[in-house]
Length: 157
Image 1 (tube, rainbow, N blue to C red):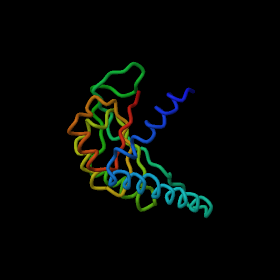
Image 2: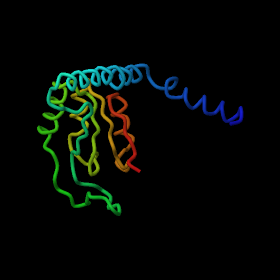
Image 3: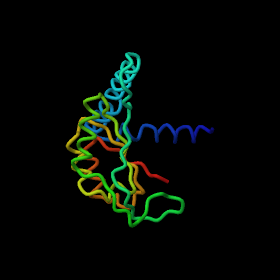
């Protein structure tokens, strides 16, 4: 690696902490970092005490509907099955009672799920990884996610 490449890499690494708002950095460090360290510790204690298994991290498929028809994918554009908002909220509340505050939100395409952002905003003490194809990640959605501060979108591809 040349000095120029090293410098560019170093600048890129500093971009997020230097350009993000302190509130977002704090929220990420608390929800993703500290909460999950506690979560893993509680999980290990439960396992050591022989308590019934409950995952440290919970992945939730909120809908089978998608706006794409990718070859080999189990989801279809005509998928109709989805969790109700009550079911989703209940899964999150139950998980929090067990000490799990980290969630992967999957689909289909989760941004097709009406009310998803409201539920994630309601649970501001949790951290959500949103697995999306990105097509519905518009500027208003991105600004809302930024304001919420507890969701990180991830491209599925």
